[in-house]
Each structure stands twice: as structure tokens, then as C-alpha cells.
Amino acid sequence: MEPRALVQAWVEAFNQSDVDTLADLYAEDAVNDQVALEPVAGRDSIRRMFATDFKRTALVCIVENLFEDGEWAILEWRDPQGRRGCGFFHVVDGRIVMQRGYWDRLTFEP
Image (cartoon, rainbow, N blue to C red; front, side, top):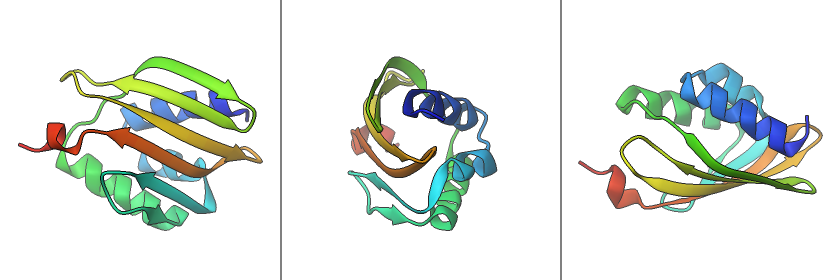
């Protein structure tokens, strides 16, 4: 799967809170680095991260822009509450090997 199509599948699974489908999009040794948090390494740890996050609150990703450049996809997103961010996805052999997200952590705090 090409990076842009993979991130479109990621958004669909994310919006359905489908932890298993999300995790399957990552390489076994992938790293998810949300810069406001500690990086999460490994597919199983990433699966647990999503499971925990989806239990805390409903999360929705609305695509504003989605770009592809070689092995990279860049996603600019917003959610229904007006929060915004962007994510960089490095895709090798049809799986995410590294994801880095930029967003304002304080906008997620109660």
C-alpha cells in the first residue's frame, strides 16, 4: 500500500476506534512519536496506546490535507472540537515504520 492510501486507511480505522486494524498498519518495530508525549515503540505497545486513548475519550480525525512524497505521507487534521495537528508517516513495504505527530497537548486537557 502506498503511503497516502495507507494513511487514508489509518484515518478510517482511527475514526472507528478499530485498535486491531490500526495496529496492523504498523511494522513490528515501528515507533509512534507524539511529540507531546514519550515515544511508543513496537506494534503491541502502539496497540495498547490506542486502546487506552480510545477508552479515555472519543477521538475523531478530520482530514484537512494529505500529501505523499516518496515513502512519506503528511496528514494535516482537525477534530470536531477545533483542535488541530499534523502527522508524518514513514511507510516502508506497506507498513508505518515511524509516525511523528505534532499537536497542542493542552487543548486535550480538561
